[in-house]
Every structure is written in C-alpha cells, then in structure tokens.
Image (cartoon, rainbow, N blue to C red; front, side, top):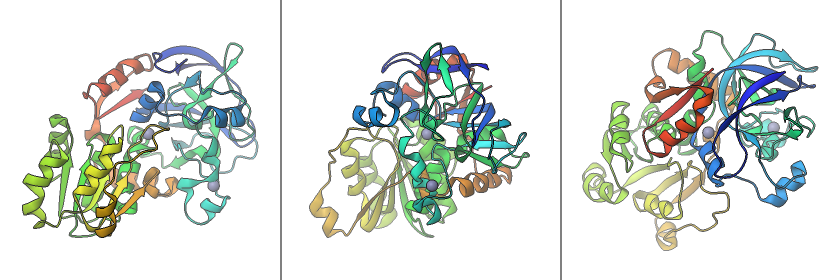
Length: 383
Ligand SMILES: [Zn+2]
Ligand SMILES: [Zn+2]
C-alpha cells in the first residue's frame, strides 16, 4: 500500500515527506496505523550524522554502506491493523507502543531479564527487517531503511512483532508514544541504572525530555533533592515545575552555590547525564559533583565515533566512583511502558507537561529546527 513518510536522503539533508510503498507484513511482522510519534533528539543525531554504524558494519548487515534513504522516528504508538503468520503477542485492533529495542524473549539477554540489550537490536541502525533481512519499504526502485527498525514518521509502519508493546486501550496513546523511548529511558536511568535511594541527592544534567523523566524517576525513588542543570533557563523553570528542588545553568555554579550547603560538601549520590549530545568534557563535569562512592549514569547519546572521555582518573579511583551506561533506562520495555502508562493514568507521572508542540507529518523539519533552537522539550507528530 502507499503511505506517506518523512525521510532523510542524506546526512545534513532536510526531512521531506514522500509517498512510499510498503508490503504486507511477512511472518512475525505487523502493520500498525500510527497515532502519534515523538520527536526524540536521536533523530536529530541521525540527520547530523552523529548516529550511525560503521560503514563496514552496515555493509555486512544490509549489503550497502549507508543508512540512507531512511524513514525517521523511533518513538510511536498506534493500532495494529494487520498481522503476518505466526504473530502471537498482538492481534488486529490492539493498541501498541513501539520499542526501539526489540524484545525477542528468546536470546540470552532476554531470558536473563535484560531485554533492553536484546540480541535482535544488533542491526537496529541498519534498516532491513529483523525477521529476514529483506525490505518492506520502497521509494520507487530503492529499498528504504527505518530508524531503529521502526520509522515511526509514517502513517503506517510494518515492523517485527518484537518491536511493539501491547498497551491497554484506555491509556493515552500520546503518552504511550513518549514512553516508547526518551521518557522511559530517563526514568529508568534514575530508578534502575542510577539506583537512587530514599534520601539521596541527585543531579540531572540536561533537562529536555530525558532529563524531565529522570527528575521524576529520582523523586519517585525517594530523592530528598534533585538539582536540575541546563544551559537553557526555560528548561530549568520547567524542571522546577515538575519537581526539581534546585536549578543551575552550569555544573560549576551548582558545585559552588548549591551543593556545599545542600550536601554539606558531600556532593551528589547520583548524577545523571541526559543532555541531547553528550560530549567528552561532560563526563568529568558530572564526576566532579559526584560524592565518594557515587554513581554517574550516561543516558544521553554521544556521536557514534566518539572514543575519548575527559575523566580525572585519579579522583575517579580515589573517590571509589562508578560510571554506568544505559539503554532504555536498563528496564524491560514490555514491563516499563505499561507500568509508567498506568502511573500517568493515575496522575502520578507527568508526561503531557513535557509536550511543548504538536506537528503534522509535513512539519518534521520545523519540529527539529525548534528542538535545535531550544524551544522544544518534546515535539509530537499527531497523525
Ligand atoms: Zn529516542
Ligand atoms: Zn532478545
């Protein structure tokens, strides 16, 4: 069938809407009519070239050294419209959130309770279907890749059933779309990977979608204080509205004006990095406001080829500190998305407050211009 999709044809190219052809779902695949798609910072990384795999890996997985052309989007929600043979986890009419990390339920990581690092995610940036390595999406004669095996910037998507999470039909599909990546990641970065405990002091560096969820996660876990750090004052103001107790425009300022009194010089038990583009310097900045025995969680994406990290290794060892990476907040998508949706439904978790603007499919470029200029916490495409 013909569907409209927002596509990138090259690095630094603009998002543009095209009519593409999608095939019917093959075995273990489903077609979803999209309701909402979140506009996560990671798709901006795709546009700038910061998010990629090495060309040699792309060639190995998909037979071509580039990810382009590619349908953007990896946060989404919608209704299952068709299922292929063998699909057992959802049926036609089910409401679903997409998951940028598939949950196959069979690999070593899934069966050991860590589906956020499921083996099926290995080719997530390469493009072809994870079911059989062929393509369902075509622009003329060209096969089209999809961001994170999803490509949610489209009226309809065809994806593997492992990439969708069934949610109860009474839950808000816009909230489900936002929970499908950034919001769950931020929440889990604090609660699960950071291991925030009652009475902890937490700092969150970067107060966009991810950071706003990390702040709420820290509070749910019992933090006595949460310091919101962002260079953009309007994002700090928003963070204070959702529960941050202190705000600062730089880590240095927080170190000298907030933390000495707040922690009696001890510094933060947990520091969570949720900036849109993680840099080398930010690791040491975060470490420098972390307590002895404290934890730094790196949740914000850096460029795929960044290999250097600024870190005072002497202090890192002598202060017995830890640096932990996280994907999807180190939580199982099939558990975390329905769980946080329920919290949202009961008024205990703010998501609507993070949506600053809704866009149409044709306005994806405008949405990312707004994100880059700092105007957006989270933009959402409504289909
Ligand atoms: Zn994302
Ligand atoms: Zn798996």
